[in-house]
Length: 114
Length: 114
Image: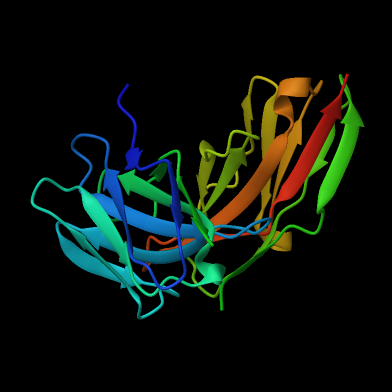
């Protein structure tokens, strides 16, 4: 079965650079979520989209922005990168925006900021 | 406010032992959903189970079983006859009825030794 695809899988950036993470949800899933997992920590919700509209927002820095496109893929744009942004970034998708739906996670993008 | 507590940071067992991972949650909503996810060393997050607040029936799936008790706000996870492949970090998570973002606990690292 098709899973959530994230690219790139690994990314190394310098401080103050920008990064773009991409997420391709499972076919027919219209809801996408982004989570950030720091080293040894639990995943923290950043932002979600349902039918190309932002549906919820968590602890996402102002330096980050995201959007969902007409084909339902999503991109997380990160600017002025800081050392503390080094983390594993997960994208998840679900069949629709509802609390009861299980979220299927991608393999993650490991971002390292030097 | 919603919160998930996994008091056990790390558990070590020998293969074939039974092990229970504890999860205690806090929420003011009467409608909510509880989840367990597994994160093996490879890093991906694997969905294990979802339970809604109106269904306190315990569930068994192979060597895995879950005990949901609203009276104690707990949703514990038991692995029977543990195997080395069960070694992973296990996260308990909560979503409330009015939002679909997941609130994760801090995770329990399970190490199963041969």
